[in-house]
Length: 164
Image (cartoon, rainbow, N blue to C red; front, side, top):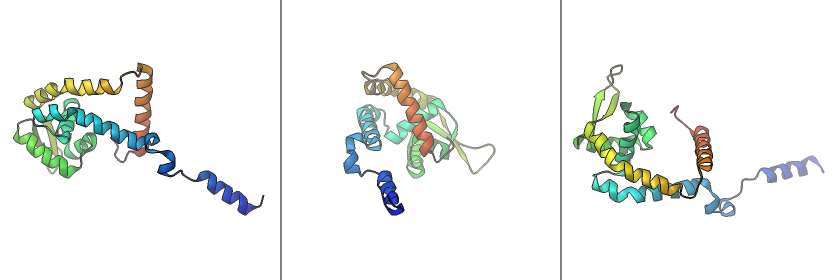
């Protein structure tokens, strides 16, 4: 086999399959989006009863665990574009669920804190979040769940753009 044939064979071996060859049901990004779409849809009615949208719910959930985040960090954790988050925070603040405070070290930066009302609202939604979470893992044993979460954490590290 000459050098040209070996190069052509190496290129063929390295060829990435097309989406049609992989199939949507075997393409992890598609599956992850479908799962999160269904998860969010399962919560939509309960969120609406509390006056929440997905960006508002994600913000409250994150702040219930890590209170006092800078807006840019909350955007990353809540997986919400800063412009969308800004509108969500306006509404959350208007409804008394969060408060924004200038950062002590950088007066241009703003930290977001959950109010007692915001914490109560999150606590009202939590049973529904937990139920949707449990439904996702129905029939999957604990060891598989831990392995799955570990794989997701590795994938996140591989695609991460932010240090958090």
